[in-house]
Length: 218
Image 1 (tube, rainbow, N blue to C red):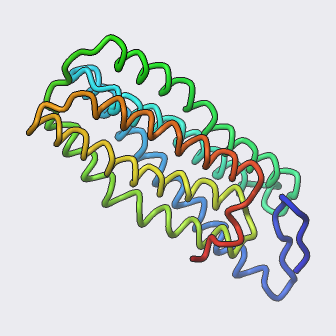
Image 2: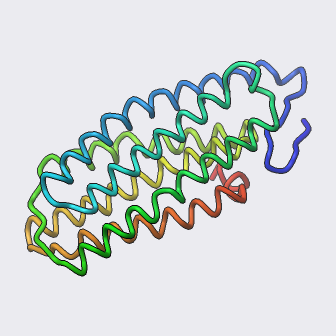
Image 3: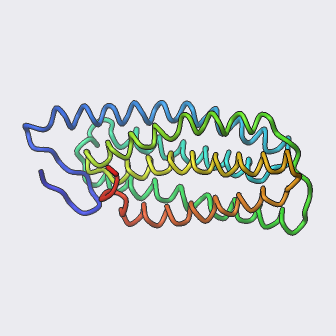
């Protein structure tokens, strides 16, 4: 097989069928992600507004941005773009940009919350959502990273990383919500949001440079 840095691998004739099966599966998983992220983002934003939780709002915004990345991957593996090196590189950059969009939005909201203060109400809806996200996003992310490695698609690995990140962020948000519910530690909420921003910045830089492919099968 031949490969160009930052581009997709064009499979040899004997491997085309397997490559196409993996591409179709990638497109299917991204479609499933898009459906879930639409639900997740809507519920998280509503719950965040109701509870006054910056972390939940940030989580909802992250879901919206992940949804855009899923659309990019569906576009990448559709039609004449299947074996396009240019489409792969463009998709890789677009997925990386989704991380960068998230950082200033979350950072501003979190700093403002820390400066102005204010209690965060208990959110049973948010707690339930984060638990569901852990169960859904982790398997999806791991599967996409494996498929991305097989397809030599850094864009797909990047989207899978976003799904894994979503699960880790769900765990962090859940911890903040539970700490607030049981101990009244409202300030953990914006701190978790800042953590989300920091991780998103790091992952965005790695996705832009295509550093995830080498270890995507781990």
